Image (cartoon, one colour):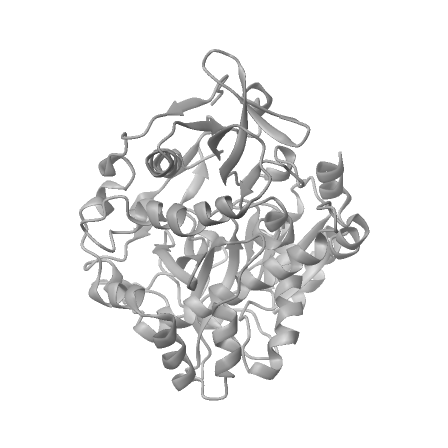
Length: 480
């Protein structure tokens, strides 16, 4: 896909049927999900502390009121997992700094046809924009590199809210310089008349190595800024360190971000050693990929050999414990954590699934914004055969590349929060509350690390970043 100019989106063009999947557009929200979304922060805290009586309630209240400096909108992917003892966990797999989800979320209030698109822009984007004292003159823009359905929706709602046209800018990894550029740290986009137009503020949904196209220190207001990606929102290596650092601070409050056991800064040559350490079952990740790209499940020598034969542009990887079925999950000091999975279907099959929970910072603290789930292509096997493809049983991401290089989505594995689909997940109200708390804690951890990485003048603290993320391939991309 190549675009030589930005599209101009006028007010009054929003049409709900264009910005939801067909299966979600008329689906009624499940009553339990609707109840969860309507709970006040006080109710969420009270219930969580009732079930976790050792938690410091005042600390949790302060965390839900936390005002992020950079990462004000995020989405966590979580696994619903358990130990053999029956202790259930909502496990944070990763956090995304510009997550999808609006097109998959049935309306919370049926009369509010712009749904979560409007809530995010009205309650989070615009208040942050209006709080900026010095902005360049210019227009508004939505920047994206995939997920056109949602981003056109954001552009149309933003045009309605601000009563002005919005530039819709496709800025993929190739040819982005045709449509956008930077001058004195101000974003300019090329309009249909091939003139460069200044932009005062931009809503960003750029997911693939966004630091190659968007500056770290900008005069144009960028939501969310690129430092939120580098500090963990698109950097799994630093996300793991952010969680570890924040967990150390949280220990006295009895709160904790729950993640798979993680080893970071692993060279390719070291990976077989760590896979063996985890009992031959592990997940290997290229830290800077997303949408399911660069994630490799390893359950046997064949899958490990296939990984080792590949070439990668980066030097460092992370290795995590694999959450599979009980008999083939990683062994760690805490035991084997395995998928609870979906409710068995009529054939008795159970599928691995994840939950995407999107949150945003509002004037009343963090609030849930949207949710959906995804299941794997094949059911979880009780025992593995040498020929089994573990990714087909564990990979839940719906996005992929077509043979032409375009993004495609497998919606057959999408699980909605509606009256029919939600029951298949086996989740209860307390699981959703736990998922929300985990998402907020992980988001704050990344935001706090982002704050530490930015100097007084708004530039990256290069030495600190390099010490935390010692990968020359990434440094070359960021620093040129």
